[in-house]
Length: 478
Image (tube, rainbow, N blue to C red; front, side):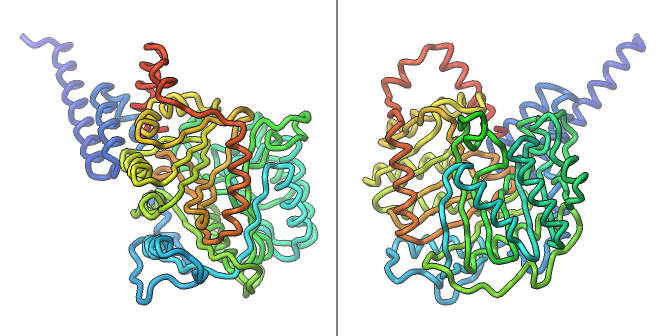
């Protein structure tokens, strides 16, 4: 005879199976990365109800449809561009292999290469922040600022004050801060900006606890535009730890870039789209968009990446760069979790005789990411890639140099979050002068680094290897 408890148990079990089947079906249909799909399916079935709840909370992309509806006319299409005569705007001395790379990137981004740009690297907050603040203080018409982290510290308050002063003198100011990044400080800078009457919005507020580091669908872009004719972008957030004003000690090294020339419009487009998404306000007019004259000799193009796009633009760009390299690949990244295809591309480049050098921090600020990274390094070191660990302070810089001619710089890391889960903005440039300047920065970092060897990797204790291996299983979420 069936008791009430048995009937309730059957009902709960049936509902659990039905919910898990529905969630698993969603995973199979909409998760592009097979590793992420397998991982989510495992979580859903191994933790009934809880696994489905976590997937609904963290795994479903709710941004894509809304972003498509709000996308403005100047936004690039989400598909391959049909080329007639090949890429335009390349310097005449560009190598043929990099001309092929330009053709690839033009097709996947649907953006034309711009010529006549000036791109200036700015190392650390001590260089970047004064230049950025001077630009804000000299702005006459518009200021657009988008960042992941904007701390309520000495540097953050200095930026907030400069933005408030610009607002008072009639400059149109718009500030966009990622909702997770805005929570990094104990008190939010958003409250300060609102009190100073600076127009500010947060991007995609999550239903998560304060400072949940592994939340996805974040706006990781760092963009500052001034009067539609000067821009800054790169990997640097706004916080005191990036400069020596932090009690005289820099705890985070970073790299940012000052842009002028036609590339500023593509940078402005990206900020304008993000602001419309967050505030439902379209920014237009001469203050935001101006005729841009040539200011230098760099050929450059913006690469917009995000979970609202069906095409993996950044991943295809990195794969193309690895396959087109003939002499050298130099990578600087704080988080290094390439997928199997990227690992294979790097290994194939090394086996072809290309010098592949990868600089990563010796000590990361994200332990899980560091452990997962360590578990993968043998696959690269074994095939001839030179992996080096830079000594503290933690290096948050991000750039890639190919054959001393092509540079990729911006907000993206070599990890699943940048490649699939977050909104990123990068710039590719064809310039031997810029490559030379970044090579000097690379050499300075390399001088204080230590080579990772197979002996070192094999010599780790069994508990460390097990810990790193388990962390690697979570790589699709990190």
